[in-house]
Image 1 (spheres, rainbow, N blue to C red):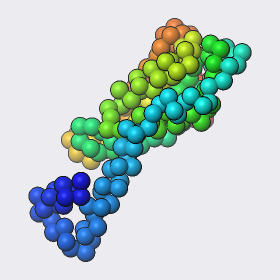
Image 2: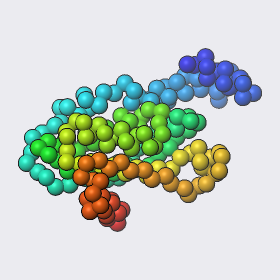
Image 3: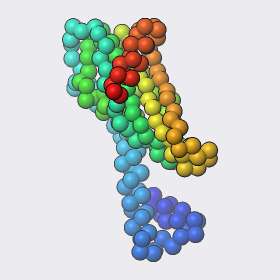
Image 4: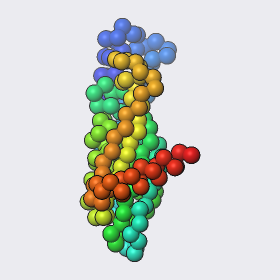
Length: 182
């Protein structure tokens, strides 16, 4: 990978041997491996040791989970917050595992829409809740730095499965997200 980064620098008209760029190929490789470390993470391993039988059938919500990801179209960052809720049906998952699940999918080359769905579907498959809802709000550097150059734009995506497809459950979730911002 370092040879490729070196070639990119040359193609851009830079001198990869100058003082400020000499170690850049190594730094870029380390950064990219970290930013895409989600490929090496197994969602089952992340969740399985934290599944618990609990008699609870009300909404469980984790809001404002910060994330950073890389747009697969331009290899530029997008970042924001993820909000996850589910209504258990015999099993709950450790709350920190929800944040780790967001990390697994955000640390891959992504599009926001797919990431949103992957988080919801993984929770659904892992604990078979009555329903699950995921909302992702993000700013995309590919829209801010290039192209349309819109600095204050945010993309919002949602995935609502099971009981979250009912209007009243969806609205309760969205209302609780809004309250968490106050």
